[in-house]
Image 1 (tube, rainbow, N blue to C red):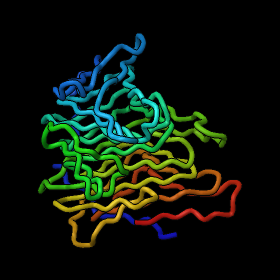
Image 2: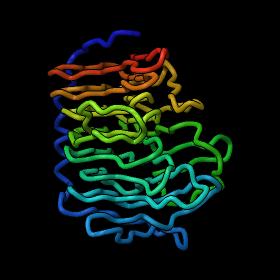
Image 3: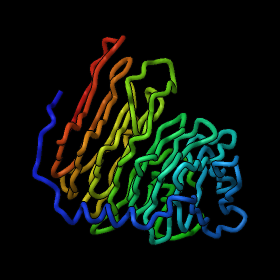
Length: 310
């Protein structure tokens, strides 16, 4: 296990950016504007009194693609993606110019993995939570590559090509990719699979699944991440490049790609502790861990070895 280390404090401009992101959110409503994709447009329908369902989209084999001009989840609201039969991956992109503010619950009505792509930035508020059965990725990449089949780009609103395989890479074409802020302190003490609960909070995926935050600077101001027995990947990218995606969901980042900063402050907690242990990988230029923030791994009923890579 490689020990975490403390690095120089992030620049004040990064903190100001996060405050700016929050100022655009309307906490009362979920603001979702689908792009016009003809018969394959995403459709927002009522799910119940407190949540909306995202239907429609473009199905390509095992993959379902959604496209939005704006995508925000309001406080105490839920937004759930419908999960058609045989779909194992749901990709949602934001092609507009605004940050996505996730202030309530983001979920999937099924077992598919969920990807949220917004190059402008993504903010998870204090009340944000996940309700998914698969893995979850939030990224400010410009798009996702699918081997030689092509890519799903958030820079334009064109219909996706025949992208039927698993994603192979994340594409960054910006000099300064958008930031990701995780400030979620919502209770996450639930049992997505037989395991244990230990006062978890923040964004949580089911045991053994992956949770990935990939963007510019990645900041957790009191925010939690939990993937018991699974994998957490946090990567800060400061420039252009292609980030490879391995078969196990981990990232392959070239040494010549500029990296940004990762910070955990005010009691932030990242944990993969669980049956069989788990893995945490952090790729950044500077890593700041202070104010009682923690990164935890551990094993409860298996002889596997957890791994922390920084």
